[in-house]
Every structure is written in structure tokens, then in C-alpha cells.
Image 1 (cartoon, rainbow, N blue to C red):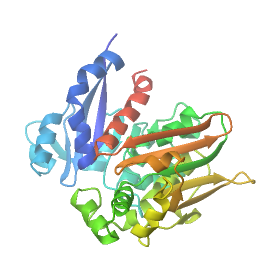
Image 2: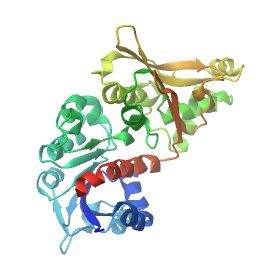
Image 3: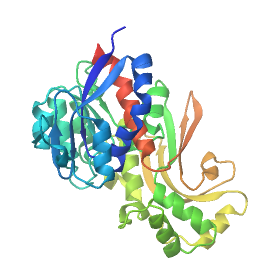
Amino acid sequence: MTTRTLRCILTGLGNIGRSFLEILPARAAHLRERYRIALQFVAVADSSGCIVRERGLDPAAIVACKRDKRGVIELAGDDIRVVEMMTAVQRLPADALLEATPTDIRSGQPGLDLARAALQRGVHVVMASKGALVVAFDELTRMSDWSGDRQAPRLRFSGAVAGALPSVNIGWRDLAGGEIRSIEAVLNGTTQVMLTLMGEGKEYAAALAEAQRIGIAEPDPTLDVEGWDAANKLLILANAVLRQPTRLSDIAVEGITRVTPDDIQRARRDGGNLILLAKAERGPDGRYALSVGPAAVPAKHPLARLGMQEAGIVYQSDIFGRTAAFSLEDGPIGTAAAMLRDLLSIAPEIAA
């Protein structure tokens, strides 16, 4: 069988985008032998600009550039051109846009405009960043195969909801045909680390400082500790899996800023735990009540066993019963792996 080359544009070369390029060399032979594809990067972009080479850029050179904390435009020269990122997405011959730019939850930019432009011209889109999905989920899905149009470009975004955890895929693909009665999930790494440390006796401020030191928490952890990051991910699950049109204002949100070590110790007395729980529960009217907040879960609950850097999700459905999944979110590799997973899920259709 012939190996098909997939021409990709990668926007965003932070931890996730760079990790995506780093994991590819060891998998190149596997991708050719099992999936009959090879990945060619015709454009990549970071905050310094966007470089283009239609016969393909060298991923190793890009990774080395980013490890040296340099912008990719320093690789320009000979037949490597510098263009506007939007110009590359709008005009360059490409099969897929891999979108990993930093998330702006309020505007969804720049990912929103990039995804729009790609979908409008029939380019498939794989998203690791969630801002565009939070702001304009309905618009983007109407432009893609999520609308039910099998001729429309594919839109995949499993990495935007807790990285490697297949939270979206389980719900919309593996539980197809069932009625989902509830979703319970731990979707935010910062709060899971902090609550674990606080369970060991650290006060809130010390737990936050440690989470920042090990690189889990951002310098400004507001979105995480106040529950909004988990709420953004729950919003995507509600729209994609439950098919309930949802805005952030539809979710009751409480963070962990008022949680104390004593609260956690009380939850743990009988083998349970205290977690930041994202929850969707189906009511008698068929609509789901959505919430994010600290919750004590009993020892028998699957999420009570999560470790310090683990994410987890539990689905309850009528015919599938309880379905649970967990993953160790140790840095950006999981999200990069989810991007590869999403790309491979649509690769046969691209090749066809």
C-alpha cells in the first residue's frame, strides 16, 4: 500500500506544540507501517511569526530552535519564507491545521479565527487549545462534520479536555446509543496537585507555591483555583457529548480557595477524598445540571483513588452502566499525544 503524506500546519510552539514535534521521530516508522501516512509540516508558527516551506520543514530543527528559546523566524532563509499565520492557513495547500496556540477564554483568539479560516476552505482541524471551543462551539461544529455533513471537514479536540484522558471520545463515540445519566470528572491538574498536598498537611498558600515550583500551576493560577478551567472543559463536554447547548453562565462554579487541610482530612477519614468535581447530572426534564466545586467522594467512588497528577472521568449511562477512565497528566506530553490520536482518527478519511 502507498504511504500518503499529510501536509500539516502547526500553530503554537509552546510546551504542547513543541512536545508534539518531539514525539514524532520515534513514531515515524510506526505511522508509515500501521497507518500508511507520513506527516509533513508545511508551516509552523509561534509568537515570533510563521515560517513556510511547501516541501516540508525539519521538525528537529524547529525543536532545537525552541529549546534554545528562539523564535522560529530565525530559521528563515533559502527557501523558508516568513508569512502571516493567517495567510498560511488561508492559502497554503494543507490537509490539516493543528491548533495549539495559547488559550484566551474571553475571545477565543487567535485559535478561533484560525479554525474558522481552515474549516471554511475545507481543511481538517485538530485543536489542543480550548478557548475557541468555549467561545464558539456551535459555530465551529456547524462548519464541520459535527453538523452531520460527512463531506464537511473534520474537527477534533480531545486534547482540549484533560489532555491524554479520552474524556470526549468515550462520551460521543464509545457510549453511542446510550442515554448518559451523569458525568463526574476531575479535569484540572493544578487543583488536584494542590488538594493532594493539602491532604498531606500543607496550607493552601504552601500547596500553591509547590504546584507553581513544579510547573503545574501558572504564575497567575486564578482560572484553575477558582474553578474556571474545569468549567471550560465541562462546557465542552456538555456541548460535544451531551449535546446540550451550554455557556459558562449555565455552570455553577466554585473553586478551592476556601478549602482547608481539615476539610480534606474529614473527607479522607473513611477512605474517601476531597476533589474539585466537574459534574453533569440529568434531571427529570432531560436537561443536565452542570456544576464545578469541591466535593467529598466516598471510598467506593472511582475518583477517590486519583493520585496527585491524575485526571479521571466517570460516565453513568442506562445501557452501558458505569464507565471510568483515568490518566496520569505528567506535563504536556499527554495533550500532544491526544493531538496525534485525533489526527490519526481522521487520517484514513483524509487519505481517501
